[in-house]
Length: 143
Image 1 (cartoon, one colour):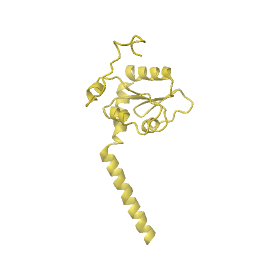
Image 2 (cartoon, rainbow, N blue to C red; image 1 turned 30 degrees about the horizontal axis):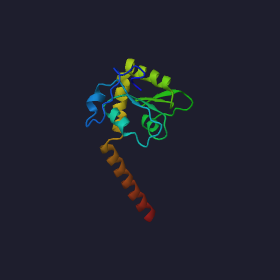
Image 3 (cartoon, rainbow, N blue to C red; image 1 turned 60 degrees about the vertical axis):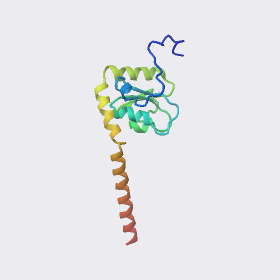
Image 4 (tube, rainbow, N blue to C red; image 1 turned 135 degrees about the horizontal axis):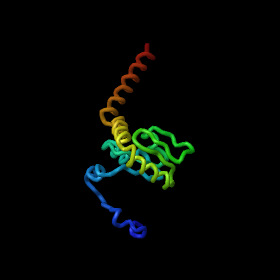
C-alpha cells in the first residue's frame, strides 16, 4: 500500500523491535488507529516516554486514558493527546499537525504525567489502599 501511494521513501516497516524506545523517541507523536482495544499498552508506553498521542475513540481504552469523552465532536484534546472519531482521517491529520507543530511541549508533559497514573508504584499503592479500606469496613461491620 505504501508503494501504491508513493510513500515507500517515507514509510518504513521495521518489523519486530526488541526495544522500540529509540524509534519512539524520534517520533513527533504516537498514533493509535485501532477499532478495538482492551487496554492499549503501547499507547501508554509511548506516553511514558513523553510522546503525545492521537488515538481513535475505539471501545475501551484510549478515552479512559486520555480522560475525555468524544461525544459528537470529530476530535477532543485530553490528558496527553487527542481522541478522534474512528475512520476520520482528516481529524487525525489535524490533531497530528497541532501536536507536532504547536502544542508538543505541553502535551508531552501531560502525557508523561498521565502515564505515571498507571505506574507499578501507583497501582500497588492504590491496591494497598483498597485492601486497608476493605479491612476497616469489615471491622466496622463486625462491631
